[in-house]
Length: 167
Picture 1: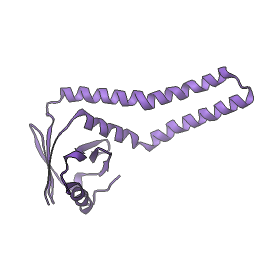
Picture 2: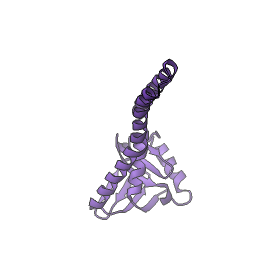
Picture 3: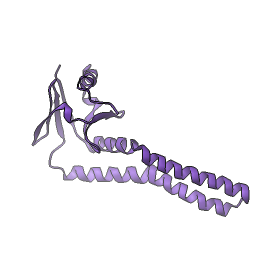
Picture 4: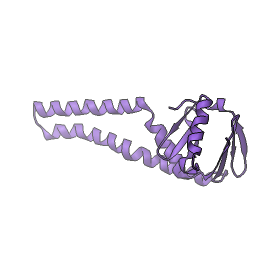
């Protein structure tokens, strides 16, 4: 079964991929989490030892900074970078992807490329999109809204047949 998708590639789709990729970095989350845990343990020790609010504030400040960086600064800077890149892009926003049994065809306003499924490392998904990884940090983004009735299941079955792992 041929799956033919047409959609607009918006900065919101690229942002969805950036957030998906950022959240998939387990080591980074572990490091930030470990720092927060160590600081919280230090906070408890400080309160038990002398109950000083001044010492507690010295520990709470880094925790607040980590949370601001993680929850606001990184997502905001990613969104701004993607919007800037979209404004400078000469590819246009219209995308067309045709998935056939042997290959997939990707069309933009001024280019057309054919890919073999063997070139896909794996695929992932968010609530809004599928991500076909062609590199460790590079993926083709397909919005789930572009699929018609039954096409999304056929797409996943095709990737399963082609042994493209889901991560």
